Image 1 (cartoon, rainbow, N blue to C red):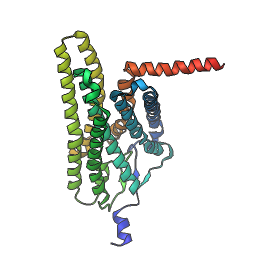
Image 2: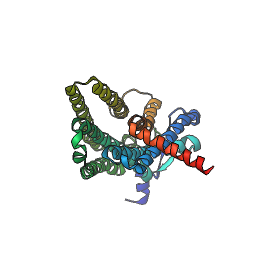
Image 3: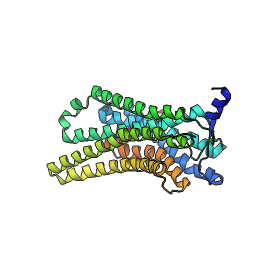
Image 4: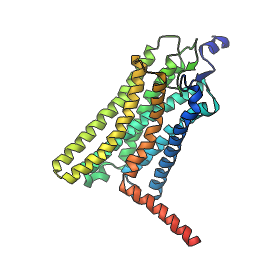
Length: 319
């Protein structure tokens, strides 16, 4: 195939629209998104730092929390591309960069789902069998589970990315979105995309579907364990903790499901609403996770206050 035909089939770049029909308002729209990004950045960096410097927090629960914060940092940082569109009208993205961004969006989302599933099991073990917590959730066991899930996510997200890179694009290169995602790219192809659609469904089912089932099963076991104890105080604490966790989990999977249904069922939804949900899907969980999993945790709060007051005391001594 000649270089000329290859250019025709594979565009040098894609054009990201941002919010379709709202180009004149995108600078104002960017303000809350930027504020959420900064908040997510500060909160997650702070959690990672607190867990790292406090040796009494070096146990599986807080290591998983720090890992979730690390993934959230990477996930929310993908919005930099969106802010470039809003602030500098920089809408062009190279073909290879678009595919890489697509892989990162879906891989980091799947990795977050995997960590949420592990954390659900962590809470179950902590409540059901607290005396054997450290022996069951050893670092070796967690590393093996985590690496297995990472490999699952890499393979299942990598295959649709590879197939998308081989699609011919012979018409428009304009993506009606703020960032590159799988179906947004595939729908621009001038060929049958049933294989891409099938691979996407397999990935969704094997990653998010299985993780959701495991999370629901884990929290059901937690509730059963607490009910067996018969203590109203224990039940109240468990419902308070699990309720906030389930709220974040429900938001994460609901926005994901909404985006998938819009693409795959042809739902009549305004493109602005679809894009808004897609952006909030990247930004809201990294903001909510530190609030729900960290701020509501007594040990994290105490560690944070200790760092703040120690710094104030040190500054007073210097003065």
